[in-house]
Amino acid sequence: MSQQVTEQVHGHYIGGEWTDGGGDGGDTFESENPATGETLATFQRGTEADVDAALAAAEDAQEEWRSLSYIDRAEYLWDIYHELRDRHEELGEIVTKECGKEISEGKADVTEAWHMVEWAAGNARHPHGDVVPSEVAGKDSYMRRKPRGVVGCITPWNFPVAIPFWHMAIALVEGNTVVWKPAEQTPWCGQVIAEMFEDAGIPEGVFNMVQGFGDAGAAITDDERVDTVLFTGSAEVGHEIAGKVGGETGKLAACEMGGKNGIVVTEAADMDVAVHSAVMSSFKTTGQRCVSSERLIVHEDVYDEFTERFVDIAEDVAVGDPLDEDTFMGPAIEADHVEKIRQHNELAREEGANVLVDRFELEDEEIPEGHANGHWVGPFVYEIDYESDLRCLNEECFGPHVALIEYSGDIEDAVEIHNDTPYGLAGAIISEDYRQLNYFRDRADLGLAYANLPCIGAEVQLPFGGVKKSGNGYPSAREAIEAVTERTAWTMNNSKDIEMAQGLSADI
Ligand code: UN1
Image (cartoon, rainbow, N blue to C red; front, side, top):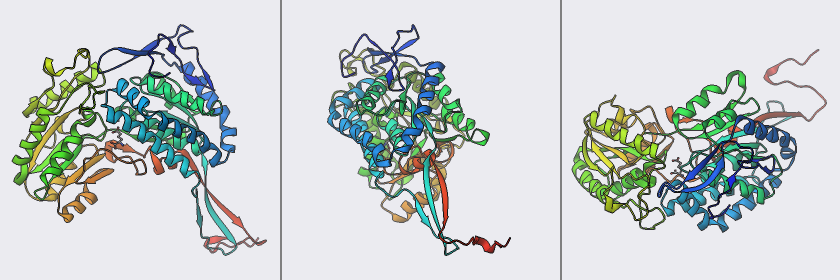
């Protein structure tokens, strides 16, 4: 399926075949362009039976796939790498049309996807274990990896191309087979990715894609044939998944799930860097990254200057057609999400916010022609006196909703406020004082810490995950390997004698 919008109902990709989309009279759902409200395409809604068939196919394909060499498995991914690069512009536009991110972000999503594929496939030619010394001279010990088996991948709409590859490129190169459910808001991207696997000739059953909603996702994560779940999305769903794995199930999960990310601007900050970083972090992707910042914690000495400059930009920042290169913020993903953002804005007011910018409802003239049905929201900026239990400072909005908090005292005081949320994913410090930077690095509760930068835009070769409510494992890059492989400690005797470690007697 290319850029063409068709009447056809698109199916699932299971066991190397496309299901007859809609042909069996099953439920369907539509993908919508959030900037215009128009329907992009229609998809079959996955049922438990579809998930069952996909898991059966993934199980059947396991033995043959894991028997290939790493390098042979990676070859299929290299084909996809080239396709992602060759179709960069076209795919970037599809991302933008389906999830509403402005076009440079749509393209960056595709770039991030091929970076991950490059990392995972390239990794096939790197060492995959450790040689470990033994206490006994005649023994050799190695740490070897083997695939866990079937990996279930559940991915969000906000990075509809990159995040599926965070999960799947690594799971597949490591020898697992995959059942994937794309987000229900971005099935078109799911369709295109599945076509890429088909074009690459991946053996049947190795990669399976079932379209659908949370019920299809739960059918994947609950099934005992799934050995590892890789999940990126909301804390609510992530914790439900994390609660169901482990223990007797023997199932593993690596989940990454949201944040209430903070940027600390100290009295030693460069104001240009501070304002620029905060604007990028709070409003890029219309605040809909799990790493977006919703709290700006600013020292009293620079608070007025920072606030004035930040507010000026928030008043002015271009919200509009995401396909237009001059746009900074596209729409929110869907009508329900606009409502959720409205409720967060209201909550802040109820809790005593002094609202400095309220562009929640755009002026008519701000809405581009032909886009009246888009899900528009603009920046909402407020200042509030810090109190630990304010819900607006603890609950993630996932929108262009940002609190300014003035602090006095030292970096310790700023970090105390920074850490006072249930989350801990990403954050930044803006300061020219290296002691403050290092203190933040070591004491801020987060997985992705930035100095003098926005807190968005992580590169794929870094661990991506958080602490507290934000994280449970790292479903990306090197750390994801831990979730999709078993380790075998392999010890070999090079002599004819049995000699034991720990001084254990071998006499019989
Ligand atoms: C997300 O926010 O949901 O670090 C993922 C970033 C991107 C990934 C974001 N590489 O902003």
